[in-house]
Image (cartoon, rainbow, N blue to C red; front, side, top):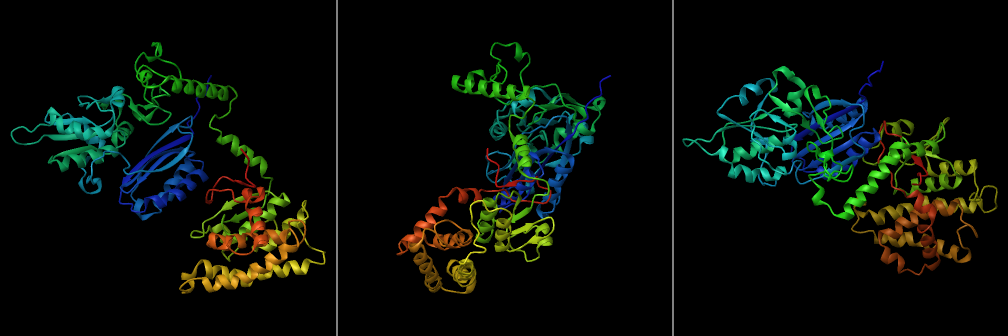
Length: 540
């Protein structure tokens, strides 16, 4: 007896028309949160709102929805659910768009001009009225596999063609001086928000649209009461759904991403993963060959029971790189204090779980570990190190394969004094030079001059030896270089014009070193619940 596999992937579809003047600023945090919860799919952000379909473990999908609804702008966000046995998406994308559903007509405002919602329970009665013009606003290939009985198919290739069709449609012509009542529908409801707003701008007074779209109708209306005929196309790996939102029988052409026409597989123009009768003539031989190679790689990956996309493999690699009870490092990429700590951890061979933060939104986990609220913070099994120099010295005490430490050497006190000047007087002048507005200064030139005295001192020392403490790089170089780099980057032309050849050469070597490249790897912002990522980063 076969035991039916239970669906484990929750798919949530949602949209909301709302004014989002800062929509571009929302992208990084939203993408990071989705990836931290291993949620896949696509979300569009635009000035007019949000539109998305995401999938993953139910708890992770609900976490993303909860994250969105924490924002007052998205408090009324609704979503539709369905489940699948296989992941509907392979990647997570958050894209910035001019419109969350492209119509290409200026001045259309669904938040103020959309038509009247009709609940699924009342839809049959409305579209059965002979005086109501029922319009399917979807693309032709969607309509081909299913639509409502008696609905008009505009035969459009994209939603942006609908306005032109409306202007020419005989079925919408006025009778006895009055425009007809119109009922419009689409997959989830979003296209109808815009299409009904369009109709109202053109003088149609009685305009209705199916609340929640076809998906909501199929979810709540029993098959025996339904006026739906066929299956409903969905833009994910399920391809289509039927009543109860059960996965349909449609298959997808991997080239044009449209459902396969009837008897497509028996056509000589069909090639698995390459073309179907609908799209065969629209791709070049080079594109077909590329598709053949992609299909070949997919089949190899399937035979090996691995994921062609590669994400699970990378996650396994990261997991292998992180030993049990690995230290947790809270860091900020550009912070010179965090940079020096990462350098020491790197050279000592200590692997950490990296948690990249934003200074504007410090995670509560970090603040619980170190209330001072500054990076770096290294959480060990038995204690927390909240100062960059403490992290450096601890790391080198565990392992110092390149001899960075100066402990026990006669120059150790000289080394520590040089770093103290960097962290005290030089850092003060650096901040005032780089951010004069923070200190109510007209400019930072006086502090640039004051900070230069320290750079002269470093240059003099580097004339005598290749590095600050002698012939080889030490923890002192690693502790000071990030701050000199920040000073130099404030006005690199000015810095490069100074008579500090030894210092400039030393800084250039640092900026071109493999260690610098490694510690400046870009990590996504960490959120609670995120999948662990390793420092040093896993190589591809």
